[in-house]
Length: 310
Image (cartoon, rainbow, N blue to C red):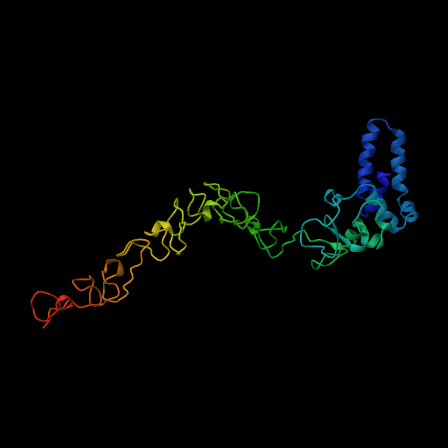
């Protein structure tokens, strides 16, 4: 059977030469019966060719296992060719075949001419474009790229360089210089995303207060200090000298808890004004608030207490 397949597939009679070589070897081992069979097979070559159709010959060839090793891996292998067909090694069968080459190829939808790799190779039709089918895929799949013959991971025209040696080529690596990352993540390339010194759930790259688990930013009081605002006046206690007086952030003239009001607008706050409602006086004097301490006759007794003020 193997001799039969070889003879059928070899129009240059190379198999006849192989047969003669076998004759010499068999003669040395005195295998007379096999020797005569080989001679008979060579002489009967014409009748064998007449007994089988071209479709049977192609399928016979492929079922005998005479297919390239690469073609044993059926399916759409990596590359840019045979996009509209089914690829097996260097052959591109029609998509209707479902599988390219191998046993029973002639019985698939499309028949021997579209589904058997041997028949496709015999046609010597080379795929013209990446969408062509029922053709032979060019040996150089990147004819315009002098550095590549196969698309590889990055495609023709783009080097499959892996600068950081992380197993991901630069064309697919968003952090081509960082072997620990393939995408920037939260912290960006070159910065670890998992470092969280204070265990507050915020990575150190975004945490200005790395040692303060209560804060990620200094806020009003700085790291390690609370931004509590006890009196709710919008000023944190750390900056509020009257943390419990919502009307003041400093003692002022009257102290925390006491407003610095000047009711009579005399420039002296009420807390220090003995006559807070008398703009002319800050102390009652001899006559009291709201009464002038005048001494019209200059006798040393204010008018308010002088029965004869004049």
